[in-house]
Image 1 (tube, rainbow over the protein chains, first blue to last red):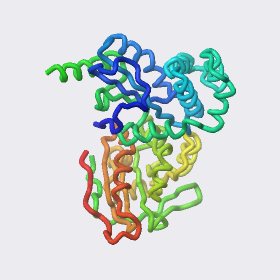
Image 2: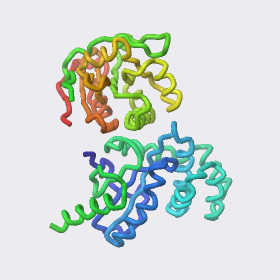
Image 3: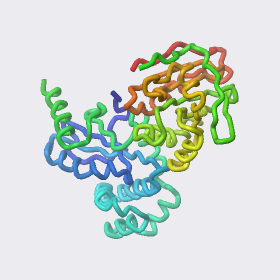
Amino acid sequence: MGMLKVPVGQHDHIKGPPDAPVTLVEYGDYECPGCGAAYPIVDLVLEHFGRSIRFVFRHFPLTHIHPNAEPAAESAEFAGAHGLFWEMHDGIYGNQDRLSLPLLIALANALGLSEVELRDVLLTEKYAPKIKSDFLGGVRSGVNGTPSFFINGHQHLGTYGLEDLISAIESHLHARAL
Amino acid sequence: MSKILSAGTVAPNFALRVTPDQYLSLCDLAGRPVVLAFYPADWSPVCGDQLTLYNEVLPEFHKHDAEILGVSVDGAWCHEAFVKDRRLRFPLLADFHPKGAAALQYGAYREAEGVCERALFVIDRQGVIFWSYCSPIAVNPGADGILDALERLPKEGSADGHAKSTSRAA
């Protein structure tokens, strides 16, 4: 079983209380259908555990089979630089079936971000080093595809079905309580 | 699960079809580290994910001057279609005739099913197996073991020689 090699830190996009007893890390690709299917499930998991969980999303784009994955990750990072990472993240997964450049631009516009600036970001691949660093950290942690989850640093080997994720997280909560 | 060749063993040479009209031998790559990835079948879900991952990690392999070769019993025409579909940028070798002969030399052939094991070998510049790992057939082994092994390889021209026995347990 893989262990998370890159600890959660300031470079990460984190949702939830910093002192939560459980940290769920996802390595995901915005164009991956499995990640799209996991997206609403992660929301339910977060809702289920409330203040006991925080969620971290890291990029793992498979760029050769998913041509929109890298631009989508760039767009999310661009929004993140303006404090709107999760808004863009939700917009992309919420509309994954029509993921494309026009969608990314429409989402940026809807969030009040500059379309010109976004186009520059995509052209220069401004956030490529950050995305690559997420990806390689995942590879070294044993991520072999997406979505891949880590619960308090331990790779989750079960499915990303709601019940599987909840019971795996509960066992980590119980382990802590002992 | 077969018993695959372990670290310290000289990597058996082979010459396999890499395209419908070209062959590639292991000795063609002498002097460079080689990653050999035996896998059961083109188009199967786990193999597709595994090779797609290696395609993404390719620049990291190249940083170590390493070449990666995929090997399965599928024919060269099948490989060609699969490479095109998945946009793979590294060669797939056809261990097609006599079927599984190369895999057999590495202890990586599943006689009962007639397919290769999901087995990884990192071969050093001198042609000696430096690290090997046989994954459960349904489990994509990822790339972390390969990268760890490539990092531990003695640097080119190092007096340290080769083949410290470092095979990783499952």
